[in-house]
Image (cartoon, rainbow, N blue to C red; front, side, top):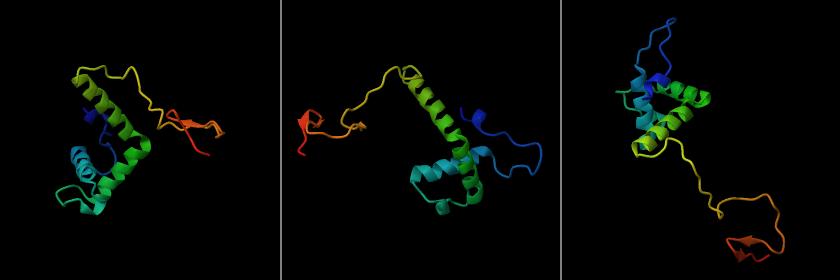
Length: 113
C-alpha cells in the first residue's frame, strides 16, 4: 500500500545500496521499540541512511500522507467509511480564550476565585 508513495530510485547518481522497504522496516523497528538511533541492529541499513530518509519524509509531509492512507484503509477494513462523518469534543478538555470573571464555570461546577 505504501510503496507507491515512496520515492523512486533516481536515474542519475549512485544507485541505492538498500531497498526502500528495508529502510522503512528499520524506521518501524526503532519506532515500535521506542529506541534511539544508536540501537539500530547491523542487519538494517546504516543509521545515517535511515535517519536521513526519516527526516526528509518528516519535512516533506510523507509521514502524514502515509498515516492518512493507512487510517482510511483500516477504517474500510472495519466496515466503516474511509473518512469519519462526525467528531466528538470533550468540553472539559477544550480551552477557551475568554478571561475569567466571578461567574466562571467548569463542567457545571462554580470555580472559587
